[in-house]
Length: 166
Image (cartoon, rainbow, N blue to C red; front, side, top):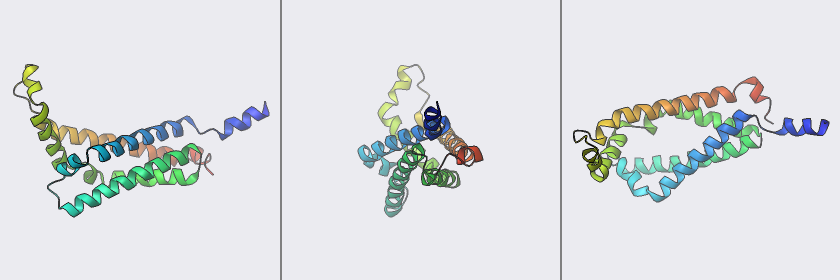
């Protein structure tokens, strides 16, 4: 009985598991996009100087690697994982427009217009374009990132959650 209690205390709380899994999935999805669609990534930010796109690209890699590190650390109940996740969450909130600028969303939706725009006509909506959804798409992405990051920071700074980390 006592052995079972010790094992339970060493397990991460459910919230830590959920946030860690979401960080892992999100990081791996972004890494796969950056590896397999690098040219598209650069095309979306073509309105920036090339050196700045490279800085953003490198920083995206760093953030994904740190996200994976934070998630694994949190699952192992290591305080460095919790702290990295908090820094990532705060950084995301503070730089949300750099992460999701309107121009990049617009470029992405114009690309979709060229590739898949014919679908609207086939579905009976010839007046619609993907590019009409650039602003709502950007707003929704910003809101989701701010809500997720805010919830992550709030959760990981609660004293009852903090107490689980070494």
